[in-house]
Length: 152
Image (tube, rainbow, N blue to C red; front, side):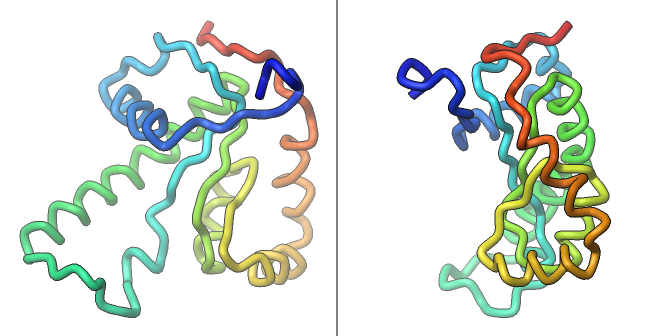
């Protein structure tokens, strides 16, 4: 795609998001070059913390505990990872946020964008909090600094 249109922004694939988290956690991420323009990262959402429905797959208590620990660890490091990517000139978009509490946390973390399954809920939240609207969308309207980013 970049060859056809060098102005098109590319997203980190899911595998790169997972590996970037591990590299950040181990302290090696600053030494890796980034060949993508936008970092899209998942968020440990309110819905994940307090599921309203039972999952179709029955998991034992040990597996649930391990999964919850992993997500909690990700949530703790996520804020720092967001700041690291933004310091490298890479906009950060969090997904999939559908609850006003998650919208507020993402805005407080100063992410550059929010992916949601409930655009109406997000629009309503932003209208109620209209002072944040320009802060959230403005960085995405500008073009990326360069196509290949390296930590300096």
